[in-house]
Image (cartoon, rainbow, N blue to C red):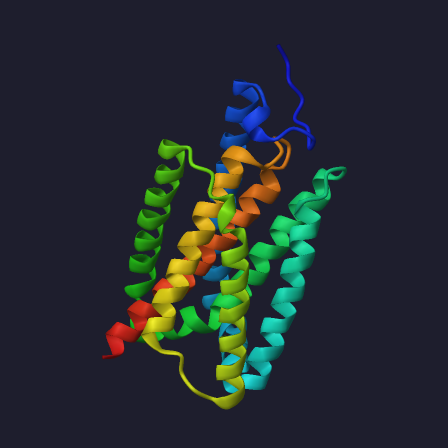
Length: 234
């Protein structure tokens, strides 16, 4: 029996074959997004453009605030495009836009890490992979619905963004405790997004689902790099 994915049927209610295909496509697109991010990031760091971006963003906190504001706007647009049911092209454009924006945001941090402790980058990648795999396995094996976390994650996310903006304006460092809290927040997003893949995403929305997972993985990787970099300086 052939089945055409639809934005009107949640994965939990779809036939088993359609649900399995949706999950397979979601994680294949996630892997593709991660590989694209690595390729773009590597190209940026190996080119004069990477140094220019890093120095521009690290040079002044006001410039970094503008970048964060632009990233939030781009993230909103990318998510909206990726969730567009009537246009596959727009979905991929949204995912691609988000991956490129993340790669640019990461340039200053990875530029510094690559200059002072290059071994940290693959180490952080391995830790991120292990944590992500463990959290994903937890959701898949328990089949629990973590959608109840949405409000808490939203509040925590806005609070974290507020602290970041305040720290930039007044020029103070948030410290390792904040970094650890952000890794925990990213872990919460992984649980929440993975749960949505199993229970709530429509079976035709694998691009949007992969974008949500990629965003959580990128956030976790970012703050694991920061934690490791902070430890290397002690």
